[in-house]
Image 1 (cartoon, rainbow, N blue to C red):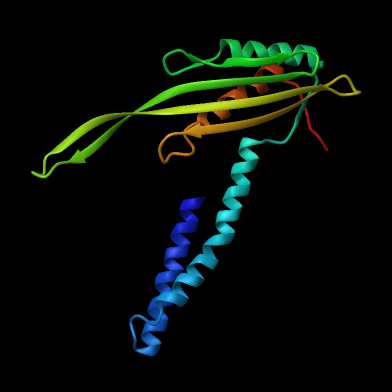
Image 2 (cartoon, rainbow, N blue to C red):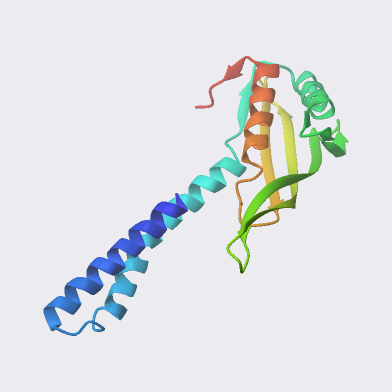
Length: 188
């Protein structure tokens, strides 16, 4: 979504600059107005992208037709059993049954092959390893109807420019929790 904002902002900048430059017969006259209008066109799209990202990292609370103690145990088992890449596993920092709070961390490395050219025009490959860190806070609460409400908050930290590097793991963990607790109640 942020790419769309950059594309729209650039398009508006170029179009405004060209139109004002053509109308005033001065090529440089449209730079500042084009820049201002390009930024103004991109800001709402950037805000929408930020809201969408916040919803992804902090999803709405989910309610399941399972008692809270069973939901807590199943989530704890999922975090203990699931692994990524070459055996990278969740490290559960806190699993407090009294408050229904689980805090876990996942640290792993992504390896990328980067193509680079040298001064002679030769193309070389270089392996690059980037570190990823994902923290999750899960709150399991019992409702008066005997169901469990689960609130999940993710905090990814990544090296490099790919801020979405942990998104597949987040999606996988939420899907695993949904599958394990199956009977989901719609919150209205």
